[in-house]
Amino acid sequence: MNQKQKKVGIIIAITLALVILMIVVANLIIENKIASAFEDLPESVKVDYASIDANVLTGNLELVTPSITVNGETTDKTILDAKLNTIKINDISYWDFIFKDKISVEELRIDQLIAKYKHNPVVQNDDYKSGFLDKIKQIIDVEKINITNADLLVTNFDTDSTIMSVPKLNFELNDLLINPNAPKKVKKIDYKDFKLTAKNLKWAINKFDELFADSIRLTSNNATFKNFKLKTKYDRADYSAILKTERDHFYLHIKEVKIADMDFGFSDAERFFFKSKEVRLIAPEAEIYRDKLVADDKTYKPLYGTMLRNLNFELGLNTVEISEGKISYLEKVKSDKKAGRLDFTDMNATIENLGNTYGEEETVINVNTSFMEVSPLEVNWNFKVSDTTDQFIFKADLGYVNAAKMDQFTQPNLNIDFNGELKQTYFTINGNPRTSRVDLKMKYDDFEVVIMQKDGKEKNKFLSTIANLFVSKDSESDKDTYRYGHEEGVERDVTKSVFNFVWINVREGLLSAMTGDGKKKE
Image (cartoon, rainbow, N blue to C red; front, side, top):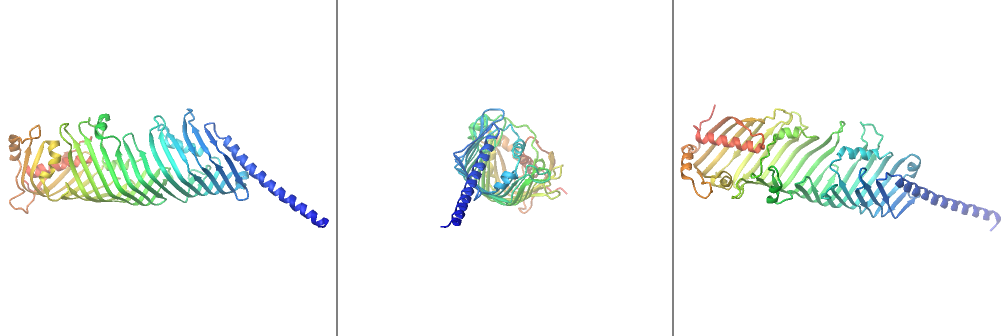
């Protein structure tokens, strides 16, 4: 080897050594910069890790077994405790990171996150949102975020009771852009799409009720919940004992909930909105129990139009479809008797324009079901949410009913039995939040009212005889003729639900048809 070749060899060796040294130094600079960034975090935030591995050639970065703890700013109590197997960042732009104060990443992978967060209900959601953005000073641009095998637990800050548990969560988000300096008219947080799957969700939605789902699948446009459950977490006796005023005890199970073509976010006015073209509830089954022995709740009960109109967010569900449903309502009136029961089975229903975004369009509810398992019932109910007078029309068509079928509700609750046949009943209620008018027509045979003794075991012959003096036994001698009932100015008890209002109207219509002249009012 001549002298010239030796010099070239030395130059190449030195150059390679310098390149390797520069790479090592650059890796160390990046690792030290990240470590310094962790050290510069507020005292309430602590980040630990086994190692930081940076590679300027590949643009990859890995934190091995990191852990994050966050303490409350006014207390020393830990509010977030998170442990991870690894955090991997692929193809990070170190140039942007070092010289442009911008974080640009191709992929962020978070593996086996185990996080426990203590939620303080005193702190408003807006405070969390603003606090999060206030702590971010750089533009963050991430093409893809992957969270795999996560276990999340949210507990109450004071009691440590579980608010939400998601033990098996996977999440993927694409094209995330966070720009803390964006003007108000431009989204500070934006993304292209996402996908979330989870199993065995548990969520305590309030101090009485809990929500469960065996599996969840969410994307930017669709959602599916399987074996969705919403139920009171106490048994009936314990629940009644802790209530100050009456409140429904319920169990709701839905085999599958499907939400299609959904859109959600914040409007230009920074108001949250949620919209969907179709929501399907497949095989819902609900049992609702009301203990009337608990003190009455005397607060004003608005109609559904008012409740939708006054939501603090924009809701727009074009169609809600219910199939193969079942609802049972039980009411406990006397301590020594079992609760009265009403059953609605084989329920199929559609709700059009459910929400507060439809302007002059009406909300229309159509229901087909079986009452007490054998009697066909059709309901049509419509109202306009934008109408501040809350006018509504409620129509129903009830087929053949053996009156004795209603005894399981009327006997324990009203101390009354019915005998006979209700062949067909139609009624229309035109109402508002205070008063209504009911028009009813019906056909019936051999109808008899049986008033029971106070103990509910024997017939009170005297009162039953007096009551039936005012009741026409049949609709007419002509079996094809209806008896008509009509009542104006039916007053609503505004401390009770809209369904109580419907029942009051039906009662007044029945009394008018059976005890009046039975003729149609022109």
